[in-house]
Image (cartoon, rainbow, N blue to C red):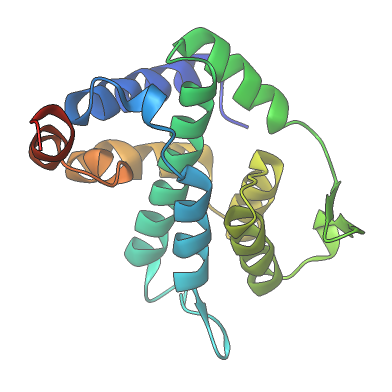
Length: 179
């Protein structure tokens, strides 16, 4: 499990990145859950899942980083960009839950294969929900530790800004300039 201090540090970076794109990003109500749905669906293929962990680990880590950035951004947005509050809520949500409700059914996370986890992550995302405990279970099944994910997050600084759907210039052009 990620330490509270590491999570707070990551969330501070994500908050700065989001604010550099749009100072009013918390009020914009970006569809972070939908982005998680899209990233999760991309990770799937007709044969199961698109990644071969031994061959395509960098692509897998990039996708996981994108999902995690969207998750942090949603919690930051819900907490009005208050990093400490958002980090505490996210840690609580990643707790030891072993099942969740989806489509009227109880789903045991331990019983899911990686493709089924990705399908569930996508379904939840497209339904406007996110379950950090499911992401934690996915990391465990993919044998990706938090240090590995943090290293990938810190090594790909350009992707930090990719979470928000609009660039700063486009936001200024569309929102701040009169029609």
